[in-house]
Length: 235
Image 1 (spheres, helix red, strand yellow):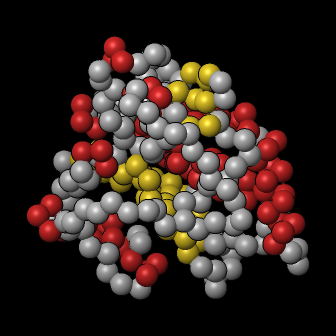
Image 2 (tube, helix red, strand yellow; image 1 turned 45 degrees about the vertical axis):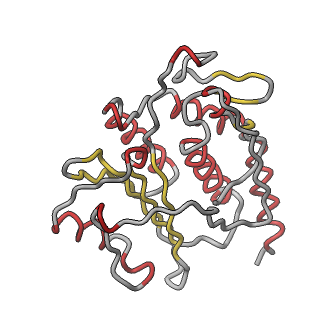
């Protein structure tokens, strides 16, 4: 069996050789407006995310949710029945781009400048979503024998508070897709029972390094991240 270091080296090599593709994937998703507060482009972006998952080999589908944008659910099953299951969460919606006069470029027309990519949500959360797509693609092409089950949920209203309005039957269907991961019921809390906290994100890494540009008060700069240079993010 191949050792871990060789598999990771192969994943890095694949990522480095496909950097341009990964950047193009990010540009494509950033170029698709998906403003939840203004109900702009959400269906189109959800379908784009679903198609990206399917291209990676996931069984991916849209989950219609009453009173909210469609969510996307993707599942990748391992051939090893004893494999662990990795659950991934992302969101595809973005904040409104206004005030537009404070941008140095069109928010939904990604622009490369000085090694950075500028556009609405090239960082949180479309950049993170595409980084994970890139990581999965690189690992799947590394010859790795470590192929866990993956369950991936991407919602379309995080930027407006994730106020998902689901009746009991919808909630049951959604939760049944991920309940077996932790062996317990997954509950969607009503808004009055939710508690929000600021904290560091939990990360699952394989000796990878994550880098980020310093944020500024300028909207276009605040959404900048260094262009992917073969890095794999699994946060």
